[in-house]
Image 1 (cartoon, helix red, strand yellow):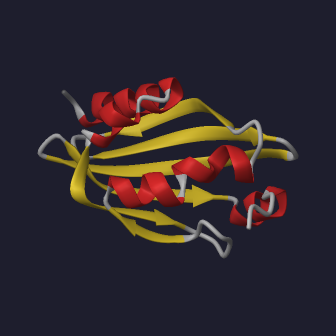
Image 2 (image 1 turned 180 degrees about the vertical axis):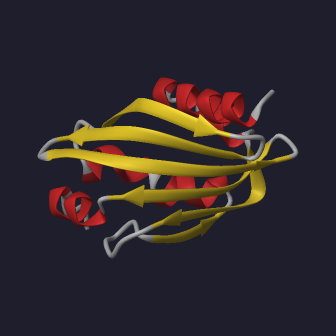
Length: 125
């Protein structure tokens, strides 16, 4: 599989709620970086940490969370996915950058409009 096919397969798994299959494309020490200064910002190591601390909270923090892929740019190891993110009170553009090595995601960087994302967040404490 190409790097792009691996990443797009992950988006398909995410959309279908298939976290078991999604987890299989992440290297155990995958580094996930979320920019900005809000409750989800930071660095997560490994899929389980990302699942528990980010994915599991998406629909609570941003009710109606959805993302649509607009464009993909890739080479042998790097994949950039341009997405439109929508939710209640949110319509934002983002770029997701993945680094693929030996068939696994080893790095995932979010380049969101973090100010817009933070303003639309619901408090779930």
